[in-house]
Length: 501
Ligand SMILES: Cc1cc2nc3c(=O)[nH]c(=O)nc-3n(C[C@H](O)[C@H](O)[C@H](O)COP(=O)(O)OP(=O)(O)OC[C@H]3O[C@@H](n4cnc5c(N)ncnc54)[C@H](O)[C@@H]3O)c2cc1C
Image 1 (cartoon, helix red, strand yellow):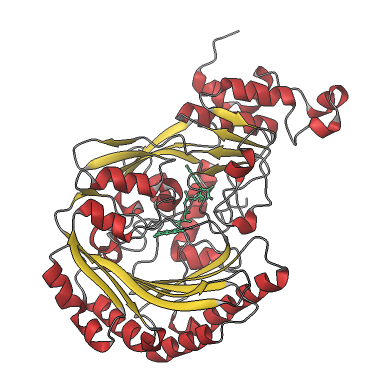
Image 2 (cartoon, rainbow, N blue to C red):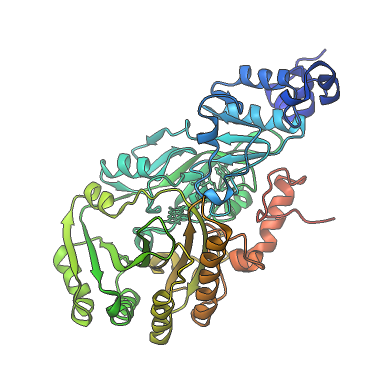
């Protein structure tokens, strides 16, 4: 028999299954009681996979399985995987993909697990990346981050060295999901999206190969991975990014009584639209769930952000806002990069939720802000919790042509997110009232939206998601997908489809 190269070995998923001694399920059924079988693979096959990994394979009876299986959005907690591979190397990911294809089991990759739609869950093999979190500073203005690193870790390691990778706010969001769908945060107006700074990535494709992808090796796939979404083209194992040195950062946090919402939000929007790229803005209007019963809520209005410059210049920028509506609490301070990033960061808690997103050319009109406040005032007594967030958008993000990468949203002044959340034990009436409030709010504000939506705030209720997330880039994404994964092995409800022949 001729020697089989590792590449050919991995590419032949079915051959690998046989090589690993996987017995057909029917044969195993005669030998094992039915209750011990898991879908698609025999007990022996699972053992073979486990023994081939540098990391660990967890089966449902293993300690920790249930907690690790939970996604961030607990509305999708009922979807349990058949097993979880805690991978430790790109080779582990290759083995998992080749093995799972050989058995016919589906896979899903999980980096931070924050998919709003629960798309990093699967009835098959969950490939859990969180043990792959090495961060390497190359010292040439670029860093390589393994795909399981959470943003809090990336921020902490880089800001301690005086460097910034523009990314999101929540410490537990994974670098992989964030990058593949864009990645917007407090540094994006100055330095771009996370995906705009992607120089190179390594990805395991459905044939089991580990491919280095950059402008020279595969410009089409690199284009698609800059915003085409996670869970579609393969499993990325690492990302090399361009990073930036930052000297001075000033941060702010301002709170108001909700009665001042129109003046405060309207003036904040005007400031953001006219501000230099160094300024960032995040406005949150919240109901805060305060008791065991639904409907018991406090309201709050807060704006936070930073200015990559002196605190005096930040004071000048914010002066019109402070004049329009006096805050009930205010912090405006110059800090070290590390302290400023930690000041703006958030941890968050998993819950069950529905989120919606929209891009707004110029923000909310005063009439829309009034309608928004009114909807918060009549928050249903049967509902649990809701919020609306407005991000100041634009800057260099809008300097990139919409067709230059898969990420198409390059002209808005604001991005908005609506979030309706409930607790996993809440009765269906509470879930329904909370979701209905959010859907009504979205319909009421729609006149100010441009019709598109952010693929990283993935929304399973969105009908024309292809157009909303990807606009005119959708057809090119389908072409790349058809080339890279013609059998559509990497698949979720809103992943890019293959072209039907
Ligand atoms: C609390 C919270 C705060 C957020 N804040 C921001 C923010 O400030 N800015 C912003 O832009 N976004 C933000 N997001 C949205 C976030 O960017 C997306 O939810 C993102 O998809 C999460 O990535 P993840 O790796 O944590 O999620 P996961 O659920 O692990 O992955 C998301 C998708 O990518 C796939 N995937 C995971 N790992 C890989 C991999 N290695 N290779 C290929 N596919 C993979 C998954 O299968 C899934 O389809 C926030 C989300 C939450 C819940």
